[in-house]
Amino acid sequence: MARTRVRITPLLALSFSAVLLLTATGCGGESDTSSSSSDADAAGKDTGPVVVATTSWEGAFAKAAGAEDVTVIVPESVQHAPDYDPKPSDLAAVADADFVLYAPFEPYAEKFKEAAGGDAELVEVNLDNDADKAKAEVTRLGKMFGTEDTAAGWITSFDTEYGKLQKDLKSAWPDGKAPTVVAQVFSAWSAKLAGAEVVGMYGPEAVTAKQLSDLSKKKPRLVLDNVHMTAGTVLPDSGARQVGIVNYPDKDLDLLTVYKNAATTLEKAMNAS
Image (cartoon, rainbow, N blue to C red):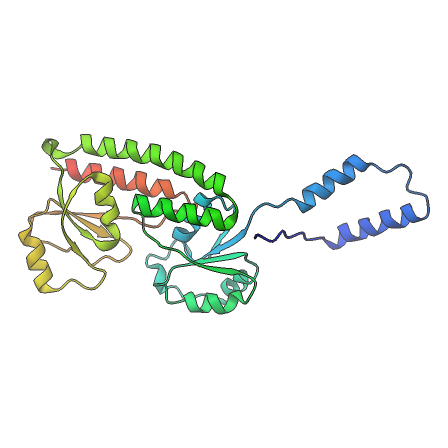
């Protein structure tokens, strides 16, 4: 259950004390109950849970699920988020949260757990942009936040846009055939979006010489790399075009934009000569 935070500034507190004094001495005149009620309603309005997310990826899931007050810790400029070293101010922000969202593979997760104390609910997020898994996670978070309707509305919009992107990508298949691809494990969702045939996978560990040999024999048209954990050019002499797939949303925390950008990138790659 989200906690409603009402902060009274010193000036507001002084004004409130003055009203009480005037009322007690009979000098307050007729009270404006409608105005007082409106102010009280505004002050006590529950705007939803206060969420702190380690990265924009968790933050985007929270926003899609209906959270409005979302603070992201790791700056967008950090290419590989797990490398980030949290500052004391980052840990302080966690203390005011209703929910703290993190991923188990993030090495700083333990620090945030300690900083959260006993008030915030720690939520481990399944960071995967596979359409079905993403929708399941948004639904789960919506139930936690008490924003099920907002989460359901987002999923409806997502299904519509995702279907359109799939249709557009299918129409862009070279010679009308699904492209063959090799995908980094955290980029496989983009192959599904494109309707591509996945003939091989690699990562997140470093690619071995044997893996490179085996993948090359598959003769993929595209290599779907993960820009956040890139292994460099995976199949440099195979003739396959390497495509960088972005998993993390921008600072606007729009998860759907990740799919739109991936679709644009994939369409260009499929039609490149």
